[in-house]
Image (cartoon, rainbow, N blue to C red; front, side, top):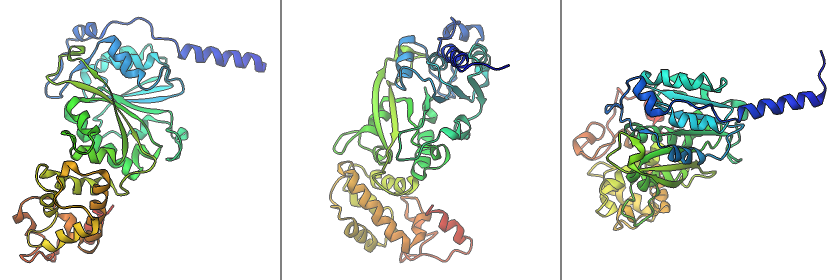
Length: 365
């Protein structure tokens, strides 16, 4: 049987219209939690976002309509954000949940989602997000972002580990970020959000400020009232949008930048020379002097006063020094006795028969 082009076009329009219709009325999140006798787990840092207007505002941060888009939701819990995403008509939604107690509630949503909802039982820190997105829709890094989103009301105990994992992927443009500059829209403790956005000379300026801003544009969208959660958290919560930059401010892998910034910021209220000195054996004052000479940074400045350009130059200077002394990257400590495992009393590298060249090379990846 043959169909006319007009009939095929009408059929396609009908399917698209059906996929964009809001979901039918469902039991509320509170009703589902009561029905399945599920309470938030303190161990998993769970706080359920349930207030409808706040949930809708959160999801609207990705756009009024999500038609043609694919979303990976982190920690859907009872599914309040899940259903709001589905209401905006995405082509697919992959919900990654570690706590199996929520599966009946999520399946309840999946039964009316026309096959658009995929529920994955996994730890988001171990899950391969590449599986959530169709690779044929990937875009080149310097093009517009692909029609993908990573979203979620994150448990506080995984927010930083997940961000560091994603930042590492962004810096290498691998993993899920081999698909393009995928935006992230998540909830974070307000204090964490402020640290991510903080500029030089601001009280919240920290290690996280540098390691997130050198890779991404960070926007704190709005603050969520504690009463919008069950149970109410003890701290304020912000919604943050993270979009990878086309060009990174520091052209080095995340772990290399984080190593330098962490040490410099460790003595946040002192002159930055104290943090820089902790990158080297105590006896190698010459390397500290070399780092400041190569970077051109004033050693009397405080770490939280330094600009992104200052940190860029410090990172490049350390890379240049570590190129000649790769063992420097084997030590991450502030204690002299740990240095002595890899360096002698004069600060010269010890020959290590147990340390393969492959292990040393790995530090430069």
